[in-house]
Length: 169
Length: 228
Image 1: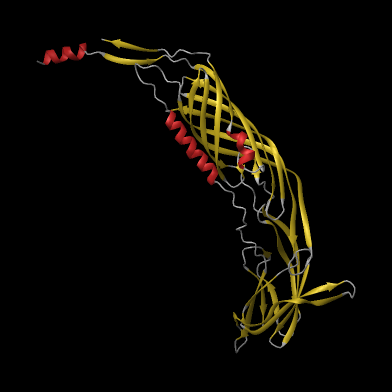
Image 2 (image 1 turned 180 degrees about the horizontal axis):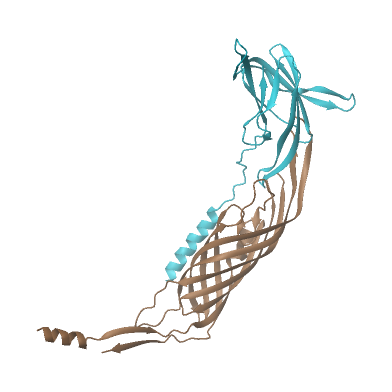
């Protein structure tokens, strides 16, 4: 009984020692608005519409930040997509500390402005991972130089990386 | 031949064991010595102290009540600070699987397997949670003071007790802990729950118990009645 006691005590101490706390964040923290491009084509009789994925030959995207001094939105130096080729999907970071996010989107030779109005929600993960900002898209609008229309397909922007917005040409 | 067999059956001794062990055989107080090492084992980030009362019923069933005080003061790699401290309690029962040998001196050593229901309601705070907007710029610091954690968990325990001196016992207990109270997704959940440990769904625990038993009924009287 005495040896039995000592052996199990040693095993238990080993178990305790082996329970090392993992302090690395291993959770998905990627929260960006997913935008897909589609091409809309009417039939010859114009009675049906065919929607297909649109691949953009060249795309450049940068944020438009509000400058209080000039009371204007100005393009940021940092470019999100820089002349990227053959793209049908883009991921855009929404503002975490503001509720309006604007983007200058250059599609081939045309430049449109995409405006997203959203609310931001704190989502606490853990002590290791901290807190994320999730977003709910309230409305979306665009200029129409290249783009025909835009719609919200899923208003919740979180770590699921589901399609949020559709841009139609 | 047949008659002699029948006679043999009737004269065969029928042995029936009657357990006259009293229902109540004393009460033990015990303290956990392993918890004194917890500040050293966890670099001062966590501490936990506990003691318990255990009743001996028929040397088979051991209802137990445990009470403790635990806490944590942790700063994560990304400088988030977590603080908690509070009481916790557990109720449950152990079952003694150490068999008594016939015609031998009854052993006072125990091999116990049991269950516990643990409860804790403790205040905690999480502070200095930074949200940095890498693309658009700016940052925000969030603080969550005065949070309350109310948790219930279930434990399966196993261990032994050895009488090292008259009425003084030593022994260990290993615990498998399973949280019953779940946190909602996105909720500001505690990092550590007093009595349970890290708030990650399941934990292992270990106690090294030092105890004293007040022998209110000391004699095990098992009569063996022989019937002819």
